[in-house]
Image 1 (cartoon, rainbow, N blue to C red):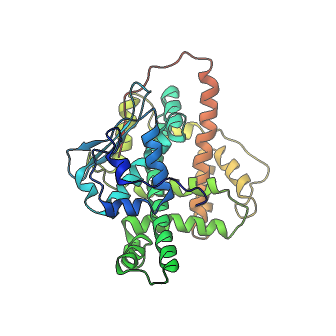
Image 2 (image 1 turned 120 degrees about the vertical axis):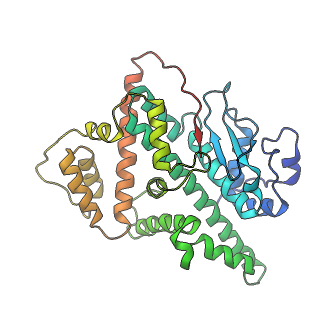
Image 3 (image 1 turned 135 degrees about the vertical axis):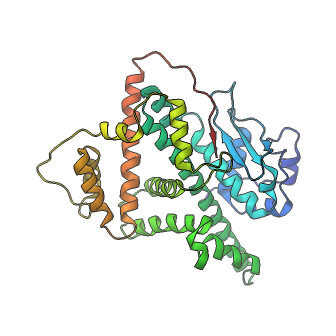
Length: 345
């Protein structure tokens, strides 16, 4: 954490123009927020953005969502139930999650660009994938914020020459997925992200920090598919499928679209994922369906962790290549009307 962001203070929160003033954020929650450089920076970025307006209270108990901005005239906003701020931990988690959406949904950011090009190309698979990936990035932001808080707690205890408090020990166990906490929720998310970062560290120089983040976001998105949204009470698999169908009525199903985007090739020699993962992924992206499925199985047979990394990079690369292609085509076509506002949970 090399950059220090100005603290989030009670005075800043109380300003009449503050975009978070609708939320009751306690002094204890503020103290916890200020132990994460990421969360401080996210809150200040939201407050300063020309594409957001003041956050609103969602009347539905337990609900939390972020509306995607269409333009400065139709900005995005946070829409979170008041009970999500009942505890410091709950406050940190919901803000980290929804502001994680905000970061990748800003104009020209990763998910905003992917979704826009999916609409232009009428590609349901790409739109549905973007719907899942935005959730992956939001969960990754939660993991990152919690890890920073735990790290700051340990540093404070060391400087004060004291042991961790009982509450800090409980947070360590819960947020790092120790024991029963590793099978669900926050702890399980942490273990997914850690497995990927640990695997990357075993092969120095193989992956950039950005690729580690993208792979973790992809893995967290996959894990999230069966979770229930706080607003529609659907699984995220159902929610994203419905969103893609609503935005692209009549488009080919996601599976069919995904298969159509792979162009058959027959190279003289198939690369090994353990010898040259980059070449293996390039081949996988251009393979016919049967070869693609077989190569997926090859990845599944790798040591734990690497198959998730490989699939994550493959998915990100596929989207990046597709986006670049659609952007080139879009320059030769009339601009589309702006899509309707979409809520991210």
